[in-house]
Image 1 (cartoon, helix red, strand yellow):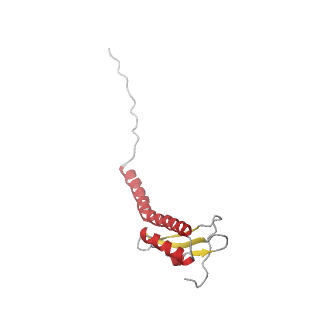
Image 2 (cartoon, helix red, strand yellow):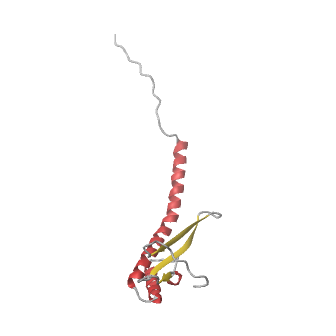
Length: 134
């Protein structure tokens, strides 16, 4: 006589359809947020690269602003212009700083506000623009 072993049924593990839908919804929300934020961050990096190049080009304040404007035009930077830069001559070489806010609409009533700033100053201190100066 052949003996049969009785296997106790093991419960299969896995994700339910509802769980899968919820995970996909959360991932979709993060992907949508990333799609809206990444271009803003890339523009910030382009602005920072632009001030480094404008400083390297040297010259007067107006020449550095024009150099930045040319760079911004080529790299599709719309958040800031050369006239918005703060250029200070505290040391031997000029230092260029910038600061701006980027508003990213998420829904009809919700907006994400990101504050960007940067400088060529090795100390990392962003110079403030004088009141009334454009």
